[in-house]
Image 1 (cartoon, rainbow, N blue to C red):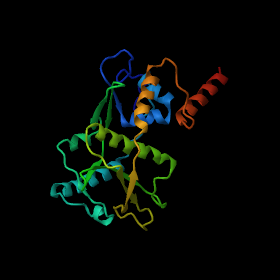
Image 2: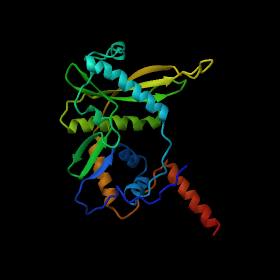
Image 3: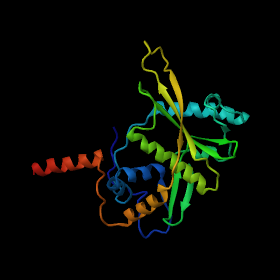
Image 4: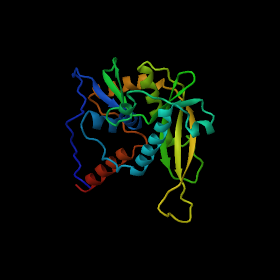
Length: 252
């Protein structure tokens, strides 16, 4: 484990700055999860410790992108589209590679808050009505049925809706239906034998991005305040900090 820098000097919000402040899709989710942790990160420069990268998930993403890109070049539907009766083909665009890049992605200036909102997509399909369909790749390993109903997957829905909102802000016609391509690793096989087999589910999701505009306003108000927001009700980091403070006080 490397040294954790507890005080960052970059990407800090200042109320009087004229330059637009960059706000990623993941940071918007951080605000939704816990406004206090978000404030500590973007206003005070002290973020949560980073997690280890999910390199297996990254490998699945990369392989899926390569696979769909082959059909993108041919302007033909992928077999999964045919199997699930999805009237679409992979969407080709000169900026697609940039839109997929972390720390770049799709970028839109939200003028009323002076935020540049960013998000890196996995894929885009286009249907016969010339509407873009946002596609997000997920990898997991579970014996349960894959659904979007579990509480933590609300963040996945928010993620897709931000991508759809970004594309709409850029003037694209965007379908209200997006898709999660879920790859589920089979852990029930008798032996590993150097390979992991996946079953693939394609789950449609109908979006509602109406929450985004007000959330951006709320984030601006949060960052401009001199008062710390309340801790998130289910924030493990805030509970941990509170427990540490208690123990330190008890031993003073």
